[in-house]
Image 1 (cartoon, rainbow, N blue to C red):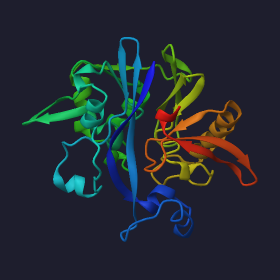
Image 2 (image 1 turned 180 degrees about the horizontal axis):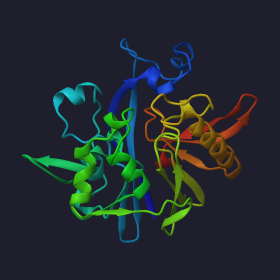
Image 3 (image 1 turned 45 degrees about the vertical axis):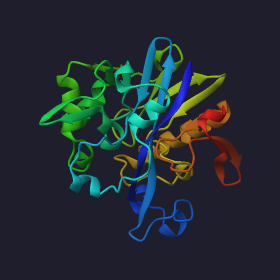
Length: 279
């Protein structure tokens, strides 16, 4: 089995929204904002070569939204999904499985492409994986979260016949080397891949921990639907990850791909940061 980092580009989000109740005077030291209070974040996906399967975890924002929509998020950087795949000698048609941690637009927008007026799967030979609980949450969104669930990213997946659901049972196996954790604070039934690789446990953090800057317990995004649930999930996960010497793989940290943890006087904090390729 091989793991590969797939960078799909950078975007910007409001720093206050990304750090919730934490004052700007504190969080700006960790992730400096621009003059409009916007901070730069990654959309970092993961590619898994496992036997005859080529599994892509999340796929970024895509490129089919209109200029007005994209203008809110200031996409930049030299990376794209196709460019990152091509560097590894792969094409979208080689992907056998698209594993969607959740259906917010910055995680699943690349699932669907627009050809003229038609919307079609970007990965023509892949099975797309979600779970029935999160799918229902996304296709019947609440008023607070509906701006993150775009129908054009979601419904064509089901219409294509390529959608399958994973059981919402913590620890359910996806492959021999990967099982699925569930988290319910950011959005309902978000899925976190946990992968055994080179004798280590790697957890793809999605939006439970968007970046190393979110490791301190009170650092919870204002985007989270159930912040106290996130707090509970973070605390339990960090204690488990410290005890198990897990590697955390970050989807949104523009500076750090991976980290390990250590216990400090202030609580659990970053020990080392490194690239996945350095394992």
